[in-house]
Length: 167
Image (cartoon, rainbow, N blue to C red; front, side):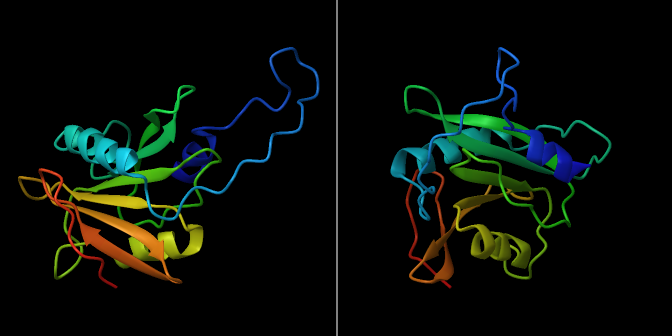
């Protein structure tokens, strides 16, 4: 069910507003594999504002997902906000998603950081993923991206300081 919600989060009406066959979608360039600075800053602000808020729905321990896109003026915005089972791999993001913020309620790794599922998601989809840990305050944050043919991650500090890329 979560996969279905994820796929429908940004789905377009296939028949268009008038009920006629939809025009072919314009060719959209693939999102960058490393987030732009404004998108990274927006992810840090919007993501950390969601820390500690309850997840609605049937799974109380679900991770929170924020799908980031750009509005009609080019500014970063939250395209969708959903809960997703914490031990489940993310499916491919819907078209128009530029980055995803995933808020983990619990640390699932020995050394805090992105999980193996987070790294696999970025390897498969080549889209930036921001991971925020809700288990600590201030909430730690990492950026996971596809760089030079491999998945790398780095820490994003509370006041915007960015750590070095690690594999």
